[in-house]
Length: 261
Image 1 (tube, one colour):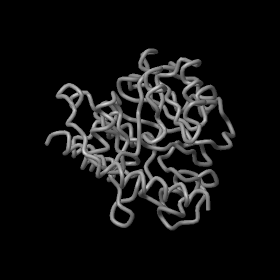
Image 2: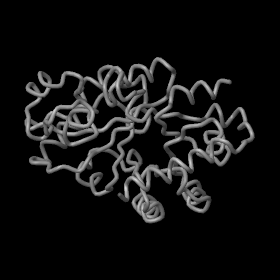
Image 3: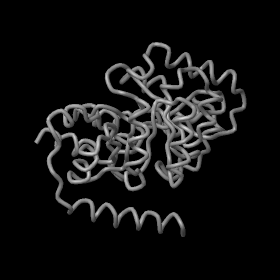
């Protein structure tokens, strides 16, 4: 029930933000804006989230970055899927951690591996890779595997690591802290303090809970701020006018067009 109420509240806020007129940002702000497609350009029935097709649509639309979620198969292959199972998106009651990659590929061929994602988009589209909390049966081996997959890319320039739980950055301590971005939910201020004290590269979270005080603290520290999930042109302009550079959205292609209007 709490989650439903949260989504209702977010929907109301989005509707209000969409109708409040905003001044068009400066040319410099529009040029600096970096839009990130959240799980790719997906549609519930026609294009599944976190698939190569969804990411390709975002790339073809000129979107700067794509956000993707990493989970692990039973044989420790990192794959791109948000949920711990394939039920919600693909209608297959398969737990990712309980199946080896070859069997997963046979059962749900749309789920890409991290290697496929990096091979197709690495160095071409900025990758925002979210680490998900799991059991991690062999964390040392998993660190090595993740390090191997990202070894051809440059941290910060080509990709960042995201996590709702910053402790995951310490578990996968394979890259500089400046490459790591905590994702805040209702705990925006506490996560902000954690990002500042730990020397992470910045902070991301919902635009409605980012205050100017928090934004300025990160700006003074030389850290980036990303906000989501922006849906309308007016909300996009609001974020750019207050100095937010990274814009996460489920409507990234449409917002990318708005920048050029």
